[in-house]
Image (tube, rainbow, N blue to C red; front, side, top):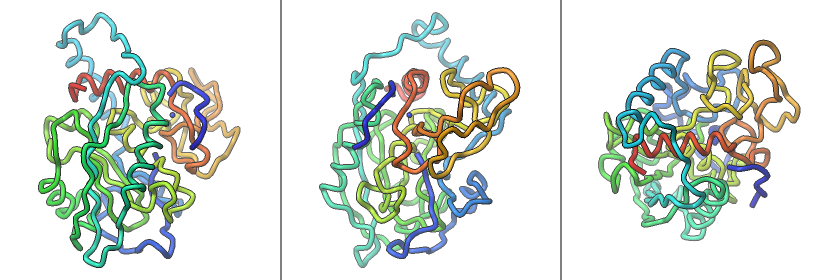
Length: 302
């Protein structure tokens, strides 16, 4: 378990090892948001354009003004004060490939809670079950199989985290939906991750459980640290330095934004919302914790 150094910092796709199937499912939509020049496709969560992010932020400002106390400034909630109920849906094929044990799930939840220990969020496992389905086992981002899987299995409401594990193929490690997506498509809500990214899995160097940490960050409302590159308001978090592009491996000291207002500071490669190796990432910033708190409260009612 990595030591946390700052107040509360996913990751997602690799050229899979021989232990994991290289089946290419319908992941082409996710590929649009990955690094096409790298063998690592990483996270399939949509990266909004500068204009899309601006429009989302305007909507966020409008919605939160309609909440009790809205417009008067949000008071972050204390660490550990918000419990998120978790439902884990383990998808295997009919031969049992992709299976996860009770210990595997427990270890993953421990990693998740350790990563968010200085945030308001704690994660409580309500149920974990296994479903054998060859089609869902390779369900890709935006596919009919993903839709059918979630329609059949999703539990709870907007405040509940549904996690689906499978072997989506194509090099992806996972993806998530944002809080603002819930109202328009509640059945699609949740996180999908490659089963081999759980702690001790075969997806090294992404097998310490931080794919889940990263994707849950999206589920709570956080953007990638490289959102917007060196321009604009980036990830809309004041205490994460701007970053031109995703970091891979662990390039300590990298500084990809060196010009312009707000360009000071080396790239936040140790942040959970970058693309670094699991062993390299260990933090969320206070600003990220506060933003996730407010966004999840406004859009999820958490």
